[in-house]
Image 1 (cartoon, rainbow, N blue to C red):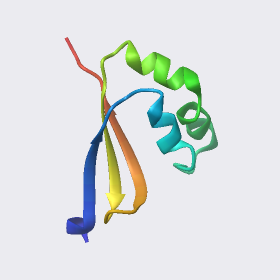
Image 2 (cartoon, one colour):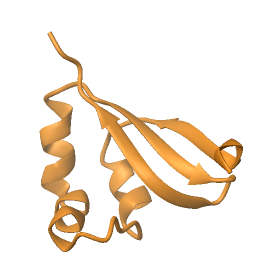
Image 3 (cartoon, rainbow, N blue to C red):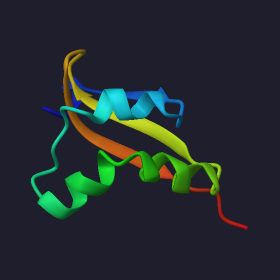
Image 4 (cartoon, rainbow, N blue to C red):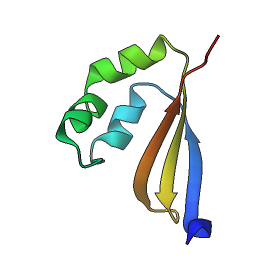
Length: 70
C-alpha cells in the first residue's frame, strides 16, 4: 500500500555511503557505483538533493537523488 511508504530527506555527504552500504538495487554494476566513495565525490559537484524511500519506518527500499538543473 502506498501509504506505508516514508520519504525521508537525506544530506548527500560521505555519510550516505554508510546508509547505502547494505542497500542493493539488484543490478551489480549500479550497486558498485552506489557503494563507491567516488559516487559521493561526483554528486557533490552537482549540489544534489537526496531522499530515502522506506517501507514504513524500517526497510530501505529505494534512493532518489536529484541534481539541480540550470
